[in-house]
Amino acid sequence: MGSVWTGFFIFLIIAMTAGGGAGILYLLLAILVVIGSEWLFHRLRKAELLGRAIKVTPDSFPEIHAEIAELRRRLDYHRPIDVYILDEVDGKMEVTSMLGTRVLLIKGEFAAALQEDGPASLRFMLGNFIAWLKARHGRLALSVLILDYLKWLAFIDPWMLPYRRSATYTCDQFGYLCAEDLYASLGVLARLAVGREMGPRVSPTGVLEQAQQASRRPLSRYAELFQSEPHLVKRYANLVAFAGAVMPADQERFLAGLDEKGRRILRDLLIRSPHRQTPGSRPRPAAHPG
Image (cartoon, rainbow, N blue to C red; front, side, top):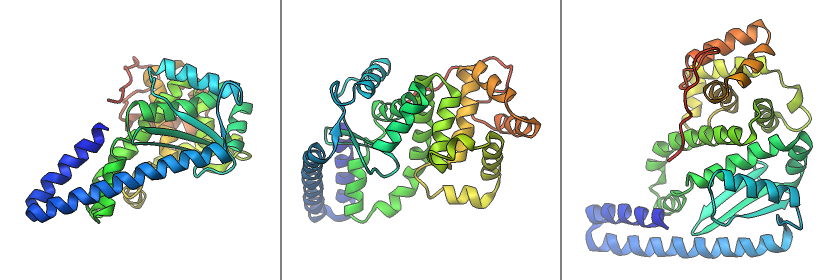
């Protein structure tokens, strides 16, 4: 609830500056309407999920439940999470954290595919989302809804998008640390880009080349400014660079599997990477979210 009160005081100051007493009254009513409607929406949504989806429990999905319990222990996250498996989910997995409600939705087909690939793939995605909750990356969600209701979001959102993109990179890194397998982690990103059937056929060299182009071309960088997530090919390259900082042997194995063109592109990307880690250099500790 801390983010709720933070947002409240921010909006209160704005209202006092802009509209005096009438502005404060309008703001209070708007906040109450938004909080009340969101509270009711999420309670109704949980009730609906309980009836139409399958909740992950030790009895329904023992393997997934065990992985979640272990990852929560490793990431020191002990708040309750309701995890559901259902047929259709936007983006294959979806997490929400609002007004004390934390819900993780997983598309059944996607969950099955990750389990078939091995435990590391499943740990990467689950660790990614648990890290999102651990770092409280959704703490501004209610404030965003209030801003949207007040028609102010268009002025604020461009300043929030860089934070969201940075959060995606951070969660990818934590997912990799949970998986402890670079190839499995990159395989999940490839699957997210092209689907289950084509994911294993993706050429690393081709992805790295696209990441290089996306980083260099002004229009591509400009397009990314309006996205809440970074380009997926850049997430792929960032994970390879991060591996060099925390598990250099993983990066070396990945480098050894590339052709000469791929090695040249990767070295160029590593030089410009924020991790500044090139093959063979001393590893640096990973940054942790606040």
